[in-house]
Image (cartoon, rainbow, N blue to C red; front, side, top):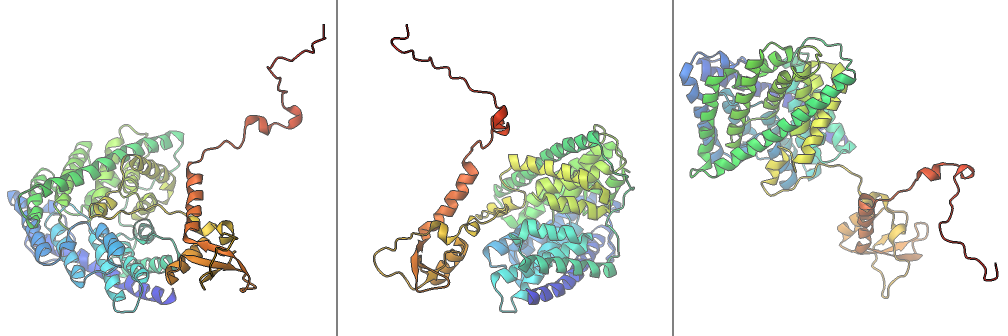
Length: 534
């Protein structure tokens, strides 16, 4: 673990530099496309004076991304996190070097030309690619490569959003598929390192500022959180449906997928004419929502346009992230819901909706809660965020089979489970399932002990190829106690299934009353009389 941790710390520092470079690259392309000047300052396309020519800018960017995907690498398509998931699950955490180069470049072109995306997805993929590439220079296992890939991804997100804890939670909830010291320690320290480096490159403090709230929500306020959680859950469900409906429509077009981003960009250009603030990353609009500076009419127009162009362009297969659009659309819903919810101060309901939309759409409630706090520094919002994000998460779990991220992977033929549980083989011992009668014939020379877990036995079977082990005394290996076979592992699964499905009542109200005070039970059967009782 220690050498991997040392490597992860170095990757964390490099990922912070890469994140800074990507943000500057997005600023460069935004200035080139919309202001015809050579500058890397982060600006909003909404301030451009191109007029009707703004419709063509995203089309040019989409065409460039399509060409890069066709002749560079098709893996640059999409919003980053599903691609990282696929690399972990199917390719032994190996990422091609050209992806590490083309992914940030294509994302910078897509976002810089007005694409309604965030930089976090590309940065996560780029940071992950950096970690994977460095890991491939050494003799490491696939599990160790995965740790370094995820360390780079978490570090990139930490440096972008000044959110080191949420970045680690995102890694645990989405990418690691485990919670073990061997992976948690390197990833956490990589995220912390990236945060330290970020302070020298991008400054300190939360990404967004909003008026301070003395958050002490009572029962009415928490009831409002439940209502908002349901609304956010519905929005998360509809947003996910809209993205994949758009993707399905593009698949029906009689043109090569290389041209899909250019066609999807037409909607971006037209939407930019209606609401220019919907173009680009939109950090300034998110802060306006949090500060309560936008009128309700502007908020409604912003959410409708941003949602429409985001779903259309993302479904076309271009390159861009989903976190920033989710934050903006979720925050806009919170701003619209302020009229029907208790008054809790400007920006409070948009803040809660931002955390809830991540918990619902990405199925990452813990990430959504901590992310919203780290983005704004509003540490007093933990309780209302907990209620809002949990309700939104519960709603989407009930109505959607998969999240917006895992649906992408599932459409490529891979099932992803994101539920952590104790392996039933870990709590079942050999002595609980072994046969004490040794069958005819000599047992194989591979042995097991009665106090070992069945997980240890299964691993030994996998390593040796033997599916039948002799069970011997630990203190006296010459004493044969019985045998354990692969079929015995099914008992662990059977016990687990029984715990999941068997319903039984263990207590009754009568059993809680002391025996001396229990009411007597009288039989309703007739008492038989002797024949000579008369």
